[in-house]
Image (cartoon, rainbow, N blue to C red; front, top):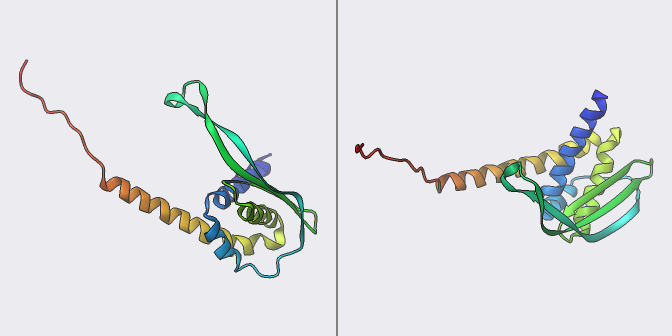
Amino acid sequence: MLSQTKDTDARRQWMGVLAKSDESRLAHFWADLQSLPAWDYLRRPEVGLVMVRGRMGGDGGPFNLGEMTVTRCSVRLQNGVVGHAWVAGRSARHAEMAAIADALMQDEDWRATVDEKLLAPLQARLDHDRATDARKAAATRVDFFTMVRGED
């Protein structure tokens, strides 16, 4: 049971990196992967809508915020390993690369290579972008304080 939870958390992590990365960055690092195994579509990339839900105040009742465009894709490697991907937007290529990367990460022969050449650089870029955004936001921070007027 613990191993399954660990595997699920690891897969959630790499799928998050693949989905959050820009397609151009993904394609840039994708070019470093050589001699990829053959694969077939289980589900060709298709565009659809999902309902995005929100909560008021973090603990209130859920409400429908609106719809979001997503693209999904599923592939199977020749050895039978299946990969899936859901990405925001309308990019069939992004969904396809993410699904193939998901399948490769589940294959022990490919996991280290994909992690080193694709996921680690993408995670580093996401971390850098997050830190840059945090610095920009911190620069505009305003500290409010209340002065006691001294009157009773």
